[in-house]
Length: 327
Image (cartoon, rainbow, N blue to C red):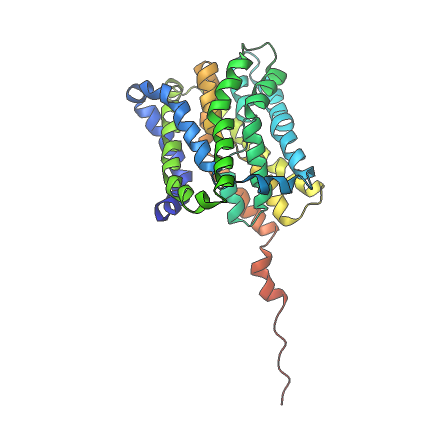
């Protein structure tokens, strides 16, 4: 547990470091690409062990924020990415595909860590991540078909099967085990697997980075432009989450959850899909986002804490003890 806490603190640095390792040692690590789907299935299983069906079912009693987040994740934000990509890179359909893919993949499991830090609505974030993860085998191929059309060749059936193996089935298995053991795995198995899942994430990022090594070693002005655009798109995703929560007049905890859940993406899922079904150009917009996704999360967490102070910390100041009268 101590190791896991230390890893959580430095993950914003370890993820870009893993990307750099993959680029520097591309020749040595590229042979491990066939192992990535199995390792990623373990990551999904480990990350879902803290969940159960009961927590998810409670959120469906007030489903509006959940529905808005799902529509934002798979329609609004990737639609903006598709429009921007077609305007700026009309001659590069696979670059556009990578931009759309990065913003159509499921919400990141690590978003729940940021929600916990800033006292957001954890059950809502949990429900969103689980529903989004389980639905990924269907949602991702359909969304890509919607925004990319016939621009790129896709095999949605094979993609659904692969995503079911890597994402949906491990998540369902973890939920079932947690339910059958009445939550005992949450306090026993889950803490033991947590640090290994982070090492596994570093492995996935490093190995998948081998496919973008040629682009990063010979960085062109076009790729620099793609990097800048992906930074702005990633930042806009956080902003859209915050804006929608504000427009819906949600409470502080829901604003925090919607900001992080719409802003953060499961980049390793996008990298695996890009590596399996697209040429290396498509993986570049996905992998380059690892450089700033965690940094943006920290920035928006700071902004949220300034706009919405933690009520628990403000409580003593808001309710001072009455002074004793003289005598």
